[in-house]
Image 1 (cartoon, rainbow, N blue to C red):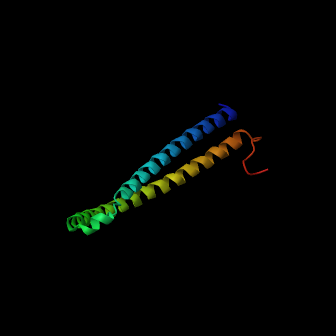
Image 2: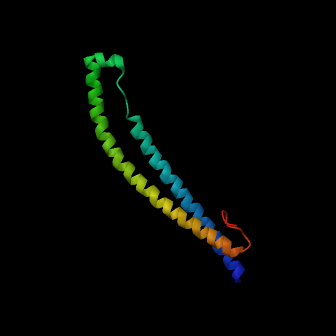
Image 3: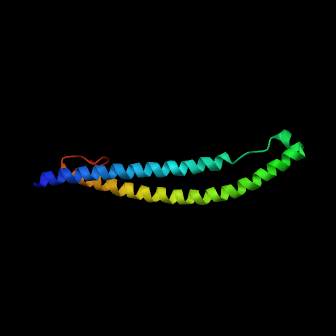
Length: 116
């Protein structure tokens, strides 16, 4: 196998790795965003007219008590999802960098964006 063939194979592998890491990053972002949406959905302000009704205020207090516990659980889950996303971001950056270096080695005439 010639040097050019090896570079082509390496470049293709780097492309595939970058695509895989990018897909993982997208999935991690979607999971993180889903948890954020669940937290947002728990916010339920009490309507002004319900503030005058003791039964409605009691219901609101019961709900808020439950929602507070649920928010705590979701915030812990969000922290894990954010950590996964950050790890995925780092993996995607490395894969992108490898991809760019191999592409540059395969085609030395190729210009690097941002550099003249």
